[in-house]
Length: 110
Image (cartoon, rainbow, N blue to C red; front, side, top):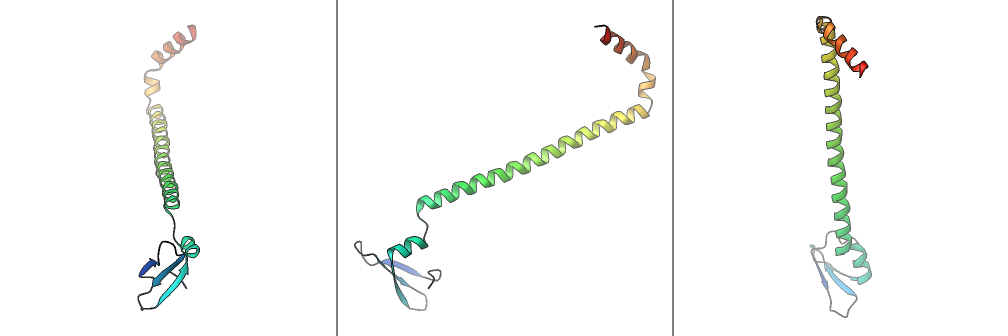
């Protein structure tokens, strides 16, 4: 018998190990305290489950954030490389060739 459909649960008294469970159809059943403890979660178990759920949620959100930023970083690098290739093809390097050669000589002399 499952307690899933129980409408009310009462402990008979403080010294008793029996619980009275009444169902919506009017039937009543008695369960011992050990069965009730195994069915319901206590506060510590709920707290532990909540903490682990929060940690997993944070890890998933952080992973998505890192994935999006890494993808954007790779896209920026690719865009910068494409701009350099396009500037080489457009003749930028040939127009400023003497200045670049002079800078390369200055750097190599230092």
